[in-house]
Length: 254
Ligand code: PXP
View 1 (cartoon, rainbow, N blue to C red):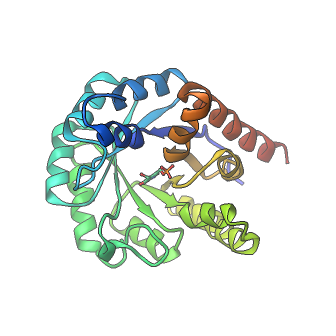
View 2: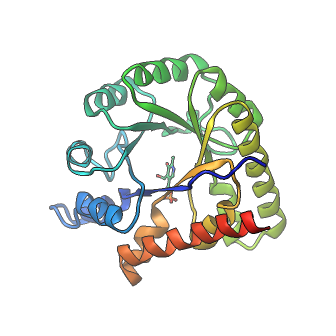
């Protein structure tokens, strides 16, 4: 096993904007949540500017870039419009995600293997502006190899199917999904890719996946914003950080 690197926590603040947009107006402000997340220990802020602008809006993204002093991870579809906005915003990183059904593989995630030309052009356009590009893909060897082939430096493994199986108590399916993630992370690292993971993670799932030494960043949103209703955002993020640290420490000790 390779030595485990520091495991970064990227906090996704999209659903603060979802709540704001439910009533219009300015409250709650996702940029204020981002500031609080950084103070609570987030290593970066993730926000998804969707084509339908259902949560984060263009001015949120601009303010996040201007007002937050930690890396901004701009989640986006690989469209010309989004690439133009990302090039203007100059985030630290951009994570290319599927937004339309046609772009989804059966396992979820971006179908890089099926649309290499499009993804390669997006990776090149963003990468040449100094933006670190990650591709949100299933832990499928075909997609991981395609990510490498199109020149992406980073992949983010889609953990949604695993987390769903965990929540539904489908132990066998969960074990199979976790095995896929474990092998996918190892394959990606062996190909020279940096490995992130996210989608659907709660405290328990984050602790478990933190044991995988190849993974260097988790991006977590929905659960943290939901927990914040009960315990506050600061508390939820600190508890998540502790769960991740426990997962890494226990794995090292094993
Ligand atoms: N990573 C990516 C690429 C995503 O699209 C999302 C959801 O926006 C997340 C991580 C976070 O997922 P969740 O909100 O379920 O924690």
